[in-house]
Length: 268
Image 1 (cartoon, rainbow, N blue to C red):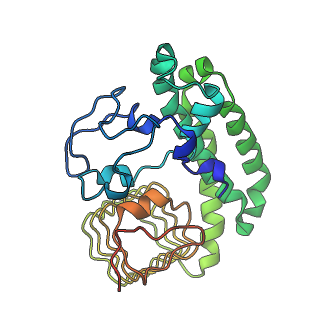
Image 2 (cartoon, helix red, strand yellow):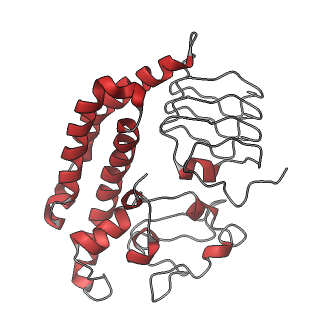
């Protein structure tokens, strides 16, 4: 995945630590309103407790990724001038950031889809969609602030569905569909889910120990606290690092190329 679609805190004005609100919970130690800088944000826009977020009660921060939207807004849309240097731009910057984040998420999925040989029949359409979304990210702050991403997502989603169908068909046999299913706490230990459609499924705290999730479509699947110990995620579709960070696993979990094994996962 291109570095432009990965969060780079060094080139960002700490936007996720300022623009986004959070409530005191198991994921966050305190309440914070939108536009209020997190108490852990330093003058250089770095997190003061980055290496100890989980033990400090901020596990929610470890499962967030802007997909590169933070540095794009900071360095391109606002030309490298921060909300501290130009307080009058702060409100607009905070409004633009979540819009850009949605666009970058679409770019991330489209980029993955174009790289999949099985999706060759729709590569042309995917490239056109990618160019359109990239063009939108280059808009002015005023244009981005007013942009409704929903229609754009509506154009991209059918292409991602076609991609998913083409790739999952290579799994062989009859694949399972659990799209949008409520599988919270489900006992799926050792489940044969190769090539399954798990788009938008709720897999919170599900036991997926040793499950075969190779070639499964995991776009939007909620994997919070799901146990992926020993699971096979080889070539899983549209999986993101935040999804893995929200789950549990171990050294025997098989990950797709390009993903990092979360530091909090157990050794085995």
